[in-house]
Length: 151
Image (cartoon, rainbow, N blue to C red):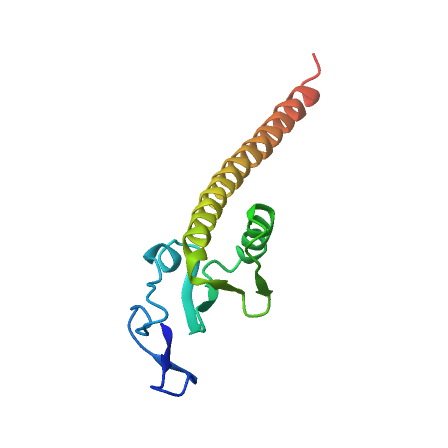
């Protein structure tokens, strides 16, 4: 994971590889909830901290899920949260205050729930369509036999 490092007394922000720990600066004692990085929607969460704000970038886990996640986020997001989308890299980004993390976590939990429901629906629909196609083939073969058996 990526995190940011504050060089003492300078206020400059540098990116570095680090553990999933909170940024250790007195003005920003916040930890990223584990629900943001292990919610199943995203492969990787990159985070940068600056002046009491957090910039998060999420890499979407499923190749085909990006568009659906984007739609679910936009449809369900509160007015206080804004997102940036990069379809080419399949990433979602947001810039928020530290006190908005819980709101973001609740939104992502809701999106995950809706995404799982959508996937279950798509699976059931695929099964129904497959059944209808098999039924149609069987029906057509039975009618073909009956049509050839003139009584």
